Amino acid sequence: MNLSGTNLRSLILPVAFIAALALLSGCGSKGSLPGSEAGAVAVETSNGPVRGRAEDGNIFVFKGLRYGKPPVGDLRFKPPVRPEPWAEPADAYEYGNRAVQAAGPAADPADTPGMGEDCLFLNVWTPGLDGKNRPVMVWLHGGGFSSGSGGDTLCEGKNLARKGDAVVVTVNHRLNVFGFLQLGDAWGPDYASSGQAGMLDIVLSLEWVRDNIARFGGNPGNVTIFGESGGGRKVAMLMAMPPAAGLFHKAIVQSGSGLDAPSKDEAVALGRALLEQLGIAEGDTEALAKAETRAVFDAQQAASPALSSPDLSSPGQLTVPARGFVPCIDGIALPRKPFIPDAPAISAGIPLLIGSNKDEMSIFRTGDPKFGKYTDGEFAAHVRNVLPNRAESLIPALRSAFPDYSPSDLVVAVESMKGYWAATVMQAERKAAQGAAPVYVYFLAWETRADNGRLRAHHALDVPLVFNNVETMRDMVGPGPEPQRMADLMSSAWAAFARTGNPGTEGLPDWPAYDLENRSTMIFDTESHIQTKPYEEIRRILVQN
View 1 (cartoon, one colour):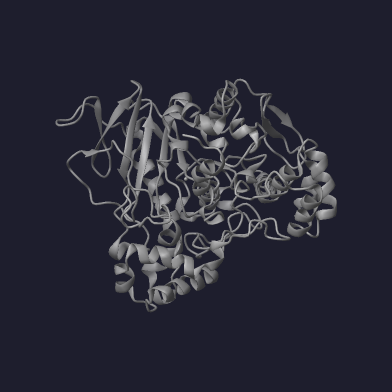
View 2: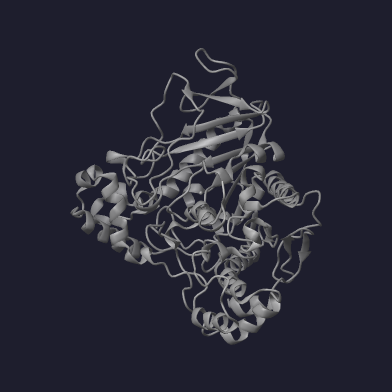
């Protein structure tokens, strides 16, 4: 497939931000089961027996494992519950439904194959069903809080499981209005955390991991949660959620530092606007349960008109909470802002690996007819528009930091540094200030040669490198041996961090933990290196704590 230009946007952008331009203790038994296909293997889980298969001779794959009861009807918008147990082996050969989300202008979310409200499924890749206590890596997909799935090609887990001798898990959960509709007090205690339903789905999936992953060769006492873009924000949010405490032991945030979250009052107001669109009276649980999927999905656009023309710049501000139907501070599942004003004490002992890509926002500019044609004056005017109080010092600092960049590249640079890098620095600083567990910071400077190299180190480029999925994503990572060399380094570092809490690995220089004096950062590039105080002048201008 050709992923250049518009086609590349169609792959990455729904995975990144659909709103921006409209991711038991003991060992299980194994062996073939009657009626199963050749090479099938069985594992007994807390919900019932499941049947997967070996691929490439040495990786066992289980797709579409149900971890929650279908959240439909009376369970819609409520916290998830465990499924009814089953006795007959359930085939785990195909991905389960992804959450309801946009699927093309004419598609009906209620009738699109492979998508539906019944979406509480996870996938497991493991090198062995042998009780070996491997590190467990649970991936939370990108797509903001509105799109994506654990079955996206970018995050297929086989190669990372093999490379890191780790158990890789990817998760589907409720998204957009179905995952994050906060209802008011009139709806009663069953709906008190309706605005956190999608995050509580993830909590339930982590409980499944705790109870079952030993049967898949993993160590339930060594679980790393990791995610990119919206998935990174989910990781940050879990670090502040009491229901998730004790269910993970390390965390990785890629290009998605979730510092903020909207208040319950804001979320309830948005929810009321949606109910008005649907014609559902306050507290009418029967009507809410019976509303058609398509009607509920479509109503969120009218309730949130700003979503149709997103503001990517947010003049004068560095970090703003995600808008629309996203997790809110409900006072129960999420009692505080994830990383404002400081890092949450509840996860102080969790080591953190965090970073961003150099040219994150280039992928969002490909639909801009001026992309590649901006003048130097237009670049300066853009900076003055988005950061008026800092522009006069930031403009020369950006030109100095990126001397070979065209004006269009510099437009991307200010948006990337403002929207991703600065938030990464803030989150790393607040985590390091706790002094309880190390934080390691990286920066992906390596540039893909795909699409004639015009997107440089764009948003989501890190994902196929971390998952070691170079060959299936050549149209994204580009030709030649360099992408595989980068994938070898990054996938090994991520697996090392999951195993030990330190991302140091062969082929990389010594990687010190981040502190407020040196700000040591691993620069991933053809010659990866540690840089102290990277982009210090830009940091001084942007990060004004």
